[in-house]
Length: 153
Image (cartoon, rainbow, N blue to C red; front, side):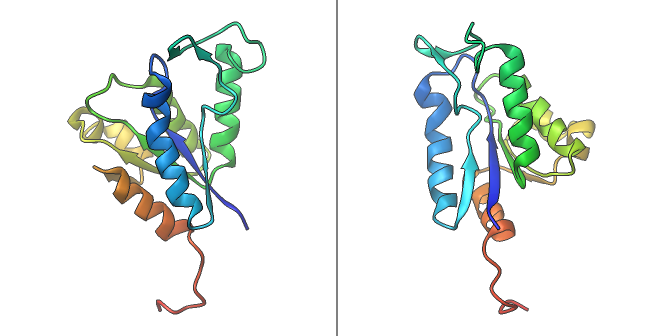
């Protein structure tokens, strides 16, 4: 059975590198364990040097972006929400966290932002609050990695 991790995090206003580098690293590390990392950037057009809303009716309008991301959140087993404190708050990532919670998905939030860590409603929707991507990837692999026939019991 294939396992999936949705890689939620800041996109709007980010360069291709800013939006993709951490996702590529996470997806590569997950793939090494047979887990697929789903990037919300698949199909989304780059607007000049930065990501934003476009007139592309297939994948660039707000409705198209929301529909694709909601579909991917629903299809994923775990949502890894990367919310670095040094970047502006990603409202889209917050929305994806709440979609995931509503769908009964496990959510791992990676941040050092105390406003996010201490928010009571967000706290109720998040299963793990971690400070590094390495920790989050370890949790994904631990939860979704191959079962070993009871060797750890």
